[in-house]
Image (cartoon, rainbow, N blue to C red; front, side):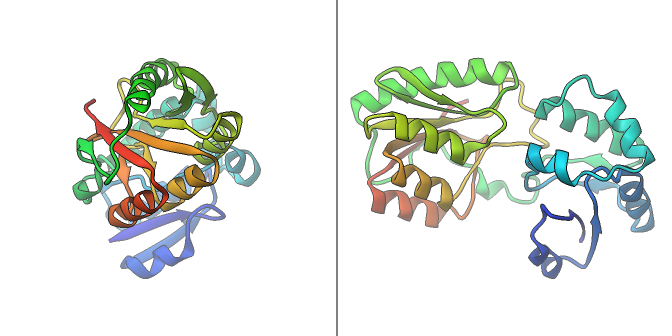
Length: 241
């Protein structure tokens, strides 16, 4: 297995889990294409994330990267990633769904924790789903925080954890977090993901329930996530797409 990591964003520990590892700077698409050809790579998956601030600060595009940037109509995640996938496919590398090797990481449907959402939390989940879908259609973000059928926070470029922090601190200690894929989500990349840190941030900022989209959300180290949620009294539910 071959991996290419972006300097400043990829965990160096990844190198010990693959056969060969290569570093590139963000935006060096020409170098990536050469590495793929040299390694005879024809299929790839995208994993992990790159913050938009990182993209502005750390990018060192080569000529192919500059040409790619000139094609972009906007910097919304979905548009950037779809265009990147098309660029890599022109280089002979087909982008596969990010879960092709790890289907077991997808969250199942139903209540996943010992505690079920209360009737009030269920109403907030239903309301939050409507808001999250509207936000997703605009390709703004994937996470919303609600309480008593009021929107406390909507994810933009800051990411999930700051959104939970902002929304939870604004609420009255009973906030509900809803994180779903965008309508028309390209399953090859940018799937929503939650992990132990998600639960820790929720617990620290007064969020009591989490709803994710079953079959379309990555549950990273799922057993640890559920143990942490149970310990914090947080309810997690997987809702049907």
